[in-house]
Length: 346
Image (tube, rainbow, N blue to C red):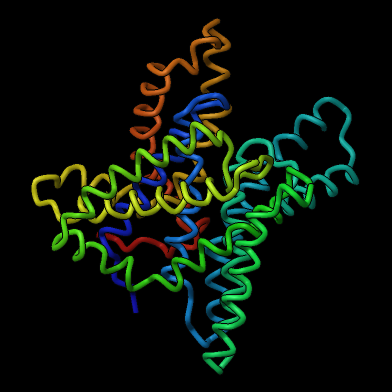
């Protein structure tokens, strides 16, 4: 049976993935980057936790999990390796052993060059797999005890990671800090799904949200590093955690409010479209933002202007616009990469 989509959640995903695009157009030192990176990935893990598989059919759920997370991730790995193998062969330096080692390292999340944004898919695969296994525990108390223990360990890890002096660039360590946000979505499912009605009835959300948005910006300006990143972590994890929670709340309130509007059909439909296709955008936007645009600006001698705020806004609009036809083409011809079935003929 096809799951009914929830507009406010798709809108939240749409807002989130647009922030991902914007974030990848910025560089360290910009307040916009610190603000976005403070909460955008916690938001996605929380939204994913809402729809964590609760099926007792382990085999069926496992196949779906591999199809929707691991397959697109490994596709990007292949696209990362093949150009390098081709260039090595063309230059006469091709080595099969090196290729195999590079492939294994990239598959494990180490050494990705062209699209590092897909670390999210790998982390999501691990987290969903753990939750799926936990769901097989028949005793509810035992199951909840296991899940809460994992989430508690994840929270402790976030707060103590700096003290442990662990390696900075390590996707597995980053994944450890993601469990708590996924678990928050898992246990707060009903609260989040009912937020739209709450926003409609209680306008206080519309007062609290802007105030907390200001808190996020202030903390981002002070902390300057973020929780969900593969090679950096903050000296102020507690403040960063507060900013992440506030940012998620602000985004969820904004998406719930937009979902209630009747005079914002264009905005609503566009955000829902982006939200439904957030995985496609995740796969496609990074090479544009981090590879293609710098190459073009460098070729015309304007590389020093690429991170000018005006240039970033223009590139953001261009990227968001380019995603629309790219999504249609992707869903028509490459739908299988993200685990979708062949689209029905009209």
